[in-house]
Image (cartoon, rainbow, N blue to C red; front, side):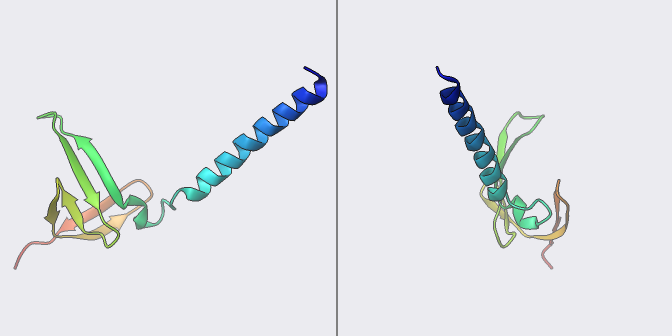
Length: 89
């Protein structure tokens, strides 16, 4: 391969990597925004080794294994969101 061809391949490769990382970062939601947690999440319990699904909807409705749970967002940071269970009166 000629040096010009090698330089072109390397430049194209680097441009592709830098562009894909830039686009990927733009697609990620802001972790300081509580909407970051919207979606479905799975976890496995230690005691029963069962997989559970937690769904957080855009209006912050919470479902655990497809069962709605009455909650209110109490706090959040970029690592966690805390819900407070609302009891029936």
